Image (tube, one colour):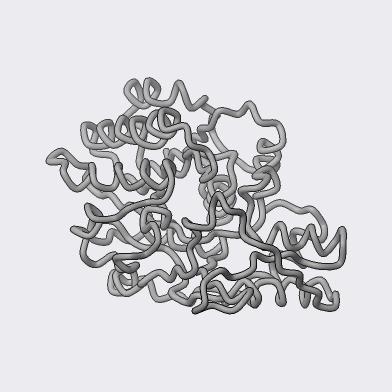
Length: 322
């Protein structure tokens, strides 16, 4: 029996779908299940049982012998929220409880960390030297909560028999309809083009970057699922791994590919980056992917062109879910 937390959310629901696709249905799905829009992500998914997030720890304690693997994808991910207590409760302490249960009952664990832990990238984006984790300076409570857990794992003597933390970079793809302002830039670009025929991007306030030339490592959610499935089937060295494409692309590239996939003429407008986030704005992120590749993952990642085209044409245009 497998457990997927955050199963009604963006990445979690896509993972459940991928597990179904390869024939796995003996899955416990966990979330708060109170968000009706988010629950649409579960339509058509096959699973054994739904367990409310608040009841999961107790359930595992009583049924640990049945649990083969835990994919802990669930988290509070709003980078604009500054409620430290909420992030500590859901992202730090809750994950610590799951870790301790996995350690006690010898249950393998893959959990979601985040590239938000890297802050402005002062120390680079290399996951080979885990001592760097103690130096990182995230830009918000969300990033702090993820980095605090990463640091905590490395201090533990009691550990799951097999564990991997994944630092997700900028993930986009189907099943993010419910995320509002926290949805990917591609999602917002699609809707802006659909409504107004144009896309608004932040103007650069850094002389080293052109308007629209800000760079991010955008990764398609299908690639995220492929990596997680690889980690389930192949035991790699325990530790914390980056999960991006290893290739940063500009926001202008993203917008242009969205226009192309929609067969609409390009029209990009630049607006000032809001003052409240301007001093914390990341102009460049790019995952170093050598560690995962050395661990045996060799499948190519979707290019931005491939991912945007698939997302727009097969999901966004028709409002379909994965």
